[in-house]
Image (tube, rainbow, N blue to C red; front, side, top):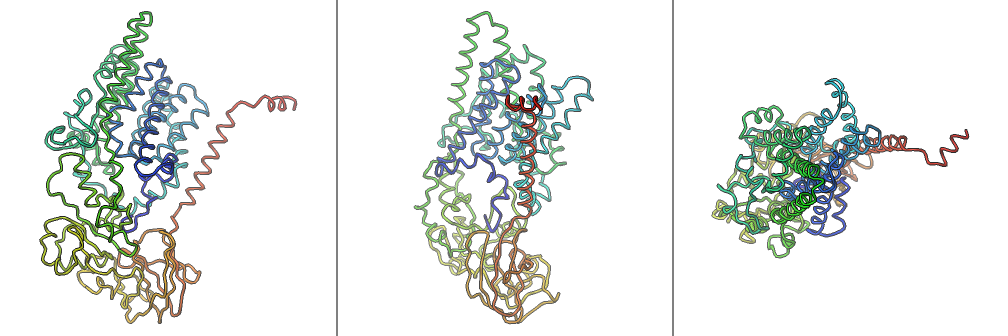
Length: 635
């Protein structure tokens, strides 16, 4: 993706998450809809099971499950599908640990480890961390005895989490490697951390839903000031809120934990609007969007609503009319949630992904097109969600053109590689001029796509590029993906400094990389006889070299690329800061570049070992079959 980010390593893609395979059963938006429906049912079933394990009556458990799975927080996350997936597993993790706490044994512990592993693979580490903190607090609360006896449960919880991390290690090792290459290693700025901080006024949407209507609602009519929160609605309804308040009065002891959980969620979600919370965030400086922590409030209110219904049922168990009133109230609550929160559907219409009518894809989708640089621009602030979708689609942003084979030079991944952020930040600051074009050529960019007035009015661009459509310019043929520079400068990898010193690097006559001699080398010659990229992770080439030369491949440098020359391994050198290179001696050679993820097979081995150990623990705890017990008795 985007100049070479490994798709698998980006945790949010959920490649190893089993439920992702549901996408294979249907195409396009239908597959996404199937995935969403599955997780809504999963969330409801998990919340119901958790409530039942807490001793709640079936109607009360149904009430809690309805609030959790149909509440505004859950349905607002459909446009963050990895977040929704992990959130759907939260009650299952709590259920498994609740079962293990109330009836300690291998079965509950193994189920807890499996649930945590699946939640981890779902691709939202912040939800997994939130869940872990809730589990630790809940287990300490459920344990009996003094403080020492309560804390004794934590190693058991930690062991389950360790087993779960081993299960997910193929994904985690790849993501950790990507993290090490990303901008996140430097931490996040205060401004980035506090983006999407909860506002006190948004808490009113718990009982007063915003006026949303599919993708037709208008921002100015729904949200004052034009600010659209991360979660469009927190709505649980007046009935659920009333039952939650009743739980605090009728079942004060069990309800206090969930009240405290909700309070912590609000405290953290306020983010930039809460100096005390910002102090915590700035120490960690890893996670952004504090508003995400409002899910703790959502979980707390869902369980409080269930506890309230249960307390009502127990109090009026011998009064049929009052019981009927409670059942009807739960039914009305469910209809209310569906009626209001059913409108929070941010999925784009199916034709959003049909790009045949977008003129730019005729050029950008060709195999030899090279990269495109995009600079989205919106003339007027789009007010309705439908207009936002239309603008995104028309400008092939954010990155939906990938469906048509468009290759973007910028990325929008959660873990943006430092080098990619460097060049994107550089390009986004430059006007259309000669220096801008040089940097585009260096990155093998052939097309510029934008509606920005700065480009539309540029005389230089009209003279230097061919305008294909009102939004698209052809700035020239891209360089070959494989080439031999005549001069290799033995310099460091500070691209910005060297590019400003030596224009030849930009035009392809020179390159900079570590040389075998440790000195600059010139007069290098070689030519590519043939090349074939059989898959995204493999390139084969036949080359001819005079003397010694550096073969440069304009594929993003990333740990895991291996080079073989005539079947023998050779080190991959970092060429021109961003790309791959390999030194060759005189003669004809078969060169192969192949991407082999570091530690991937180690991760698979650890995962298989963890799964085997969990299976052994689970089976060892199962009762012997009758026939086997008889054999053992005879012996």
